[in-house]
Image (cartoon, rainbow, N blue to C red):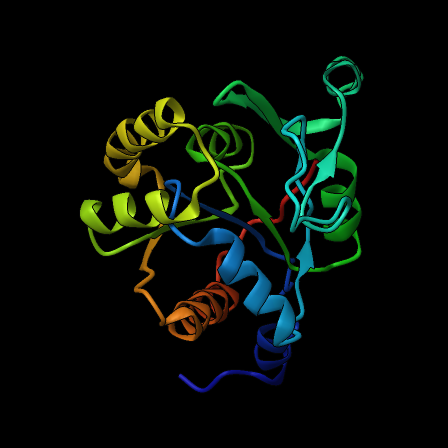
Length: 211
């Protein structure tokens, strides 16, 4: 049956609500590198900066890599309901500020947040309409190599990260998509994220996110 002009007009007027993309994965997966490459390429996303109590590293910039805050300030943010999710990871607090996410979505901006596996599970419960992407190296052996090459943890925390990564891999069913982030193939991983965003935007029944 031929569509009427009214039906055709309704098709072109389908609501295009913004996406909330949740990027997660084990330690050593390359989440920061992939996000930096997306920014370098000027991909139109609102990038939400994580809040943390972790000490700032020499190569990091406050309010760019992370919002570095005191433990006291972090607890105030929890009490004031300022965080979308938060967790204690390797003796440091990490959280996603709620207001920047809400503002971006209200403006119709596709938004991406980087969280650990605990954070992804929390967001899945409160915002199931978000798009969940699991980034991972091609093998557990590669994860161990990357973690050792970082030289950012003591032997105790390195062993803990490796043990935790083994558990995190088993959380894959929590996610909608998985991207294998091979060494020296960052642009391919970025292309995969772009393809996922394109596919999600083509969905007919995409639910609007409200915070």
